[in-house]
Image (cartoon, rainbow, N blue to C red; front, side, top):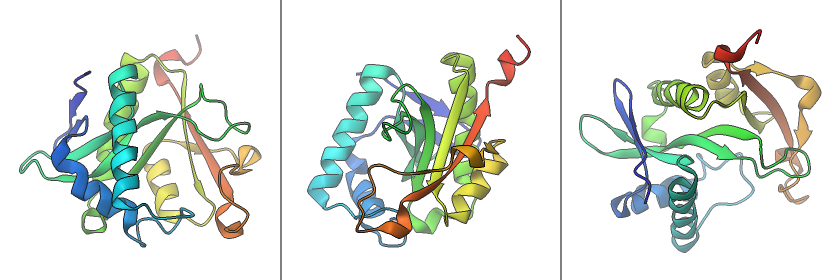
Length: 187
C-alpha cells in the first residue's frame, strides 16, 4: 500500500485507517454535510467508498485523503486530489481538488490549510498543469475556499452535473473553478 503522508501546521494528510470508518460514515450520512449531494450514505456504503478511496491512493499515489489533527491524531474529514467523475462534461484525466469535514471542524481554516498543501503537492510532485474544482451553484462556502486557495471561476465552464439525478434539479448546476500550475506559467 502506498503510504501517503503530508503535514501542515495543524494537520496530517494521510491514507485512510480502519479507525477512520466511524468519522467517514458520520460525514457521509450527516444531512448538513451532505446538503449539496443527492443522497446520504449508509455505513456499508461509506465503508465501500472508503475502501475505494484507499485503493485509489495505493494505486495512484494520491486521492481523497484523510485529514487528522496533528496534535491529537483525531480524524476530521478529507481533502484531496482526485480524477473527475463527471464524464462527458469533464474527462477522467482532469484532476479536481475536493473536501468534506465533520461540521464541528467547520470555520477553522482546516480545508484551506489542507488544500493549499495539496495544491503544492499536485503542482510540484505530480507536475500537474491545472487543478480544477466545482460545486453546486448555491454552495457559497466551497466557492469561498476555492477563491482563498487561488482558484479562478470560469463561468463559461459551469455545467449540469451528469451524475446528479433529475429528481434533484436544485443540485444539478455546478460552478467551475481552476488554478494553473504557477511553476509552468509562460513556459
